[in-house]
Image (cartoon, rainbow, N blue to C red):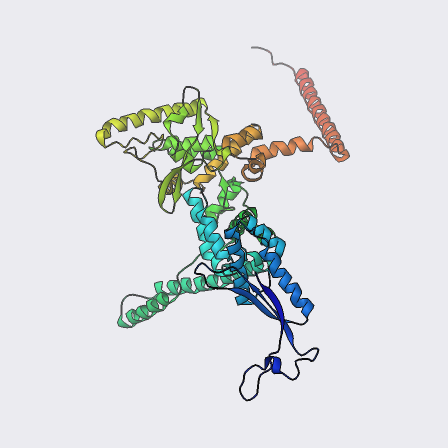
Length: 537
């Protein structure tokens, strides 16, 4: 295809306004004119011609280099590759019309061979939509990704070109999220204060009614109470972006992942604390929990299980308290994977709550698939529960919903995980025990197993953790008596002169005390021997 370089003068006739071209008297001056290039491209599908044109080169040499660059790009497509030829021609036509820089030859070659867009015009929004559409994960996880993308990523960085996304852009995004949190908190505080003030206004009286009406109108005009984007949510937003950009690298769309390098506030996971007598006393006074994650002592766990012994779902509370099943795992446990003869059950399914909808799902990770050993008492509890379920099945007759699950509603249908949590909280409140969450029963099971001296690997496998470090870092709450025993054993390992002298002094004092007691006894005995007996009458 034809291509050429030419010299061009842009001077215009002051009278007509037309370009002078070759008639310009200064055309032959060395630095007066610029050079331009033009390269014919393959025709469009409708047969119309198209070309690449660009001017403004300062010298003939620079213009020739530009033309060679265009021809090198055209040469990337083989002669027998009409699709490649069309892609490159379309790219050059767009670059020419937008007056954007010519793309690198090797980068274009890589994009052409990998089937990518030849010009990096793909936006972050377009890529996130494409990435999300290709994800094949459970619905709850997909919804979480969608929320991060819709609420945070698209509004802040969706319009940027994917290949030009930088770490600084992400830092600006997270800074904006934190700033928005401050505004939300202020707005929430104002609305709560207005609602509290409204509650103090009496209902009776025309003036009070008018005031209440005006205050309600003002409250309705305020933004609703909204949740702030906390550190955990910001970490999840970062994880979503990082995962999507990693896939973009895998598809050779980009070569750098800024999501892996942006720094944001870390999240400290709360440690589980045990409800000691001191903490219980303070909770009774103030109503405050020392930590979001609290664990009952063995005595408190026993008191709760005794209190709910007559509850229809007692077997579920018992199983979670001793074996550490998750809520969804307990709700979704089938009888077909529960073998009471071998004292074991296999965790292979769970009920997942998505919004308020419930769906069945496999365990979240490979380590979630596990075999859990059952003690004799737990087997007895499940055996009794099965007999009760059989009686319920007979009572409901044809109305019974045969889900095949261990724990169900009265008619055999699925338990709603959210309702199970609500029921547990009501039972805890009625028991008078210090509050814990349903998931904290799982924490307590891990604590009891570790306190009983069970190897951490076995505890980790029972709980379905992928790594024993998770068990140690999150679930290992030391019970008071276990911590006291460990402290005493540690102290005995260190020989201290102060302790030796104290023990020596204690032995000497004990010896002196015993010597004094012997002396007193001796004197008392000698006194008795010296007395004369009264003669018998």
